[in-house]
Image 1 (cartoon, helix red, strand yellow):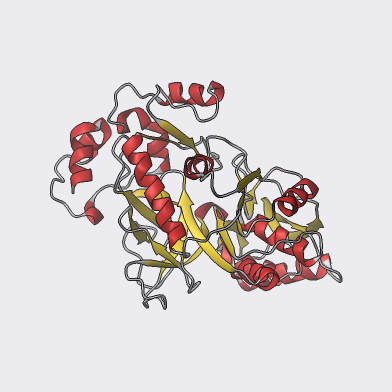
Image 2 (image 1 turned 180 degrees about the vertical axis):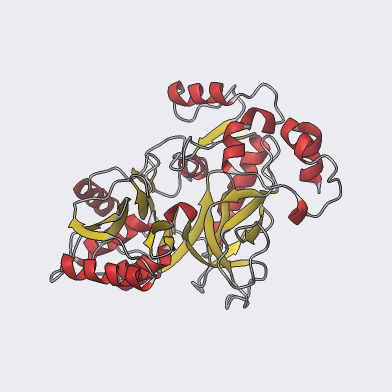
Length: 408
């Protein structure tokens, strides 16, 4: 209620859209979309001197760790769905993000020992800034950009010898295969994945190779740490003193309990400079119905299936067929490869795979993918499987699982 009143009184955008909604329940308030955040940034902020175009210029020329106007920390997303999302934080808001980040890691038992992270190459990425702020000189830490060539990445990790490893799940899968092949020699106790969907197959591969606990983390540029995994390894606990999470259907109504929603609405309780109330994330989540075995109360995310932009649309007998990510991940996650990426080019799917195991047959995988699509009602599609050295990554370092390269 305090956040809503603050936003209505101080932000021109919220003052307009919240007029007449005083005292309304959160579920009755308007949704803030990514387009709103990008296009209405200047109206959304409570500081009338903040302008998106000027911040964009700052990001292009300012040195790393610089503060905008000496006051604000700025974080920028990769812009994979259009123009990059930009968020600003004052000192109090930054403290709230740090507390949420620490709380998320604490769910895993606050692991100790040497720590390595393979993450975004951008100094403006939120994870890079949070990591730099939380660095403890008494605890050795290594940060490597995900763009590092694989031989150099493996050598650097071997030299450092971390006990704790954090990386995008696509990187974790690749490193696990390198360890299995004798190209990497790490003794890990804790592994954290975030920024991408941590599939059951990747979790299983990492656990088998290292025998380490594997923890998923749900973090976004706009909200910071939303949820984190615990030793039960059964979903992620929402950091509910930092955010309110709503899972909604296509009409932005509450999704039926225990089902995947079409989107997630996040309200960041500490956001004041740029209030984020019911901010829409295009993620497909399912909330848990049963309590966690760890005993921790509160909302828990049972699974993340992917993002709306990962839904492929292919021709069927009655028109386009929406193919949910789970249809293809059920095939590709069990393939004997270290990683994969699907590109849609009209009626053609290019399946890029890296690190195929001995005996891998591209034709067999192509037929399995085609069979899964046919079962969904897709009638016109060509599937090509290609073995590549690396899969393309976005500017922020993430590897999309599904990429639409042209008209669908």
